[in-house]
Length: 85
Image (cartoon, rainbow, N blue to C red; front, top):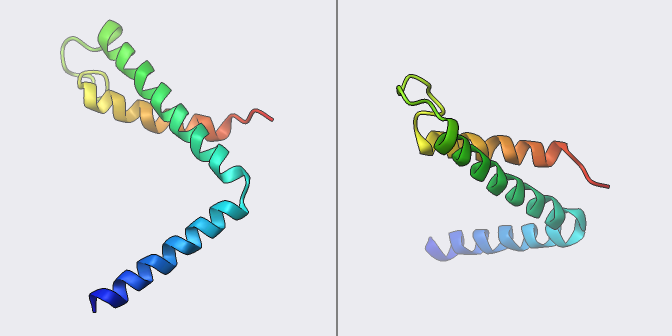
């Protein structure tokens, strides 16, 4: 049973690798999303550090983890939306 599931995983990974190799832009899009997410996290953590909510009533800016997660999501989305062609 385990060998069968490993074979399925192997076939799926081969399919993904073939798909990524087929799509020349996929690597660029992935890098763009990762860079955007990283920059979003940095910006949101800087916002938390220097301007964040001191009272704890703000759901995003009162917690550094929530702030970083929000920045990762927004940065990743903006990286996909903003295209440099």
